[in-house]
Image (cartoon, rainbow, N blue to C red; front, side, top):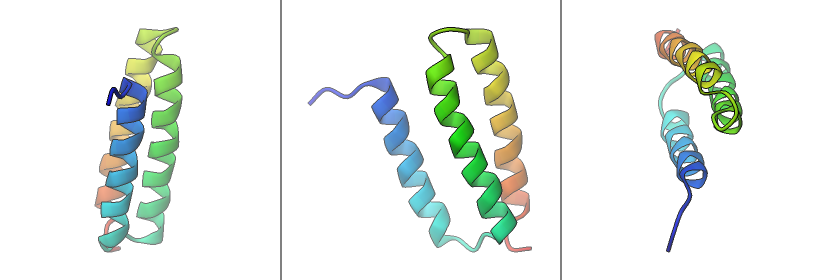
Amino acid sequence: MKITKTELRKLIIEERTKILNKSPLSPVGREILSIKDALRDIVVGVESFDEELARDLQLQIDRLRELGYKAKGK
């Protein structure tokens, strides 16, 4: 079975979301990580048109992810 890069990314995001939903995240942490996942979908769409913008978006996504984990359990 052949899988595209986009499909693989979506699968990874879905599995990560399942795992994170089992961990004790605060509502704010969950919302931050939800926004991060939505932005990741945008990056997948933008990558083929503007790699620099995709990299910049990815940096912001990484910052949101770190913030989401810091909000864990608060």
